Image 1: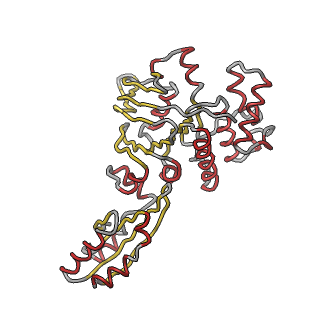
Image 2: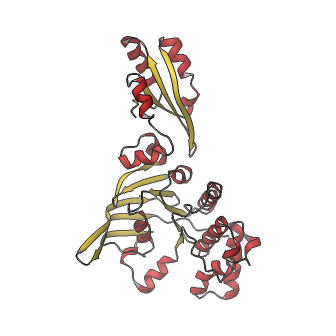
Image 3: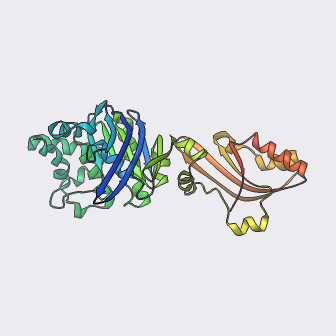
Length: 343
């Protein structure tokens, strides 16, 4: 399978509104983002945040009410007719519900976009077999969707999206209908596509696990706006917007049950966030030995974010006011973040 380096995407002050009678609904509000060529960029938000509308502006399925969408420096939002159809060939789409034709084999589903482009049946089938081999479904080429598992159907969908050898892949909630093990396999496949062929991948999802395991950068959307944008690591370590904290809490919970906080009291109830080598420090031993305070370990966990290890500790520290200040200073110098815990 040959590959083409991915294209860049620029959302320039994109607003999208829908008028239904006297009611106007705004799905996107002045969205400005840049997706660098060859990267995996995630957009996360709850239902109604505008993320699916945003991704559909990249291939011209939605036209902005105002603003521009540039794909490889071409204003896709200004194209119509034949020019738009030509530009759309550089973009492949992966759907949540697979969108396969039940009456066609896996091979013919994959070949369909090429046949619509006027490619000969033999060449279309040859290309379909090539991408089916790439996604690991050579032995399922003659099978129909009804005979395939959910993960296999999504692999067919990915193969179909790759058939035209696009510069950009758009993934619209493509793993939300899959179980965790199958999701991990699909994410591995998307990483392989990005790594081996430099394809730019734009992923929209409501699952923070997908962002954590796949994306290089992430934009958080709420109410049609981008409320936060940055690298995935920075977003996890230093979330600023309320919506971002909510999503990060699904992976790294930041608090304790109210009953525990009420019983222990808030003073000296601290949460530490540790990054990479900080995780390996004997913090609790040092705190007790070097500072001389009592420590009650309440919660600890660890997760992998891209190539980084992020750890979390929640502890209750007791001691004299002077020792408490010394303990706070001791920890502040050794962890990426130290904060009071609330319920």
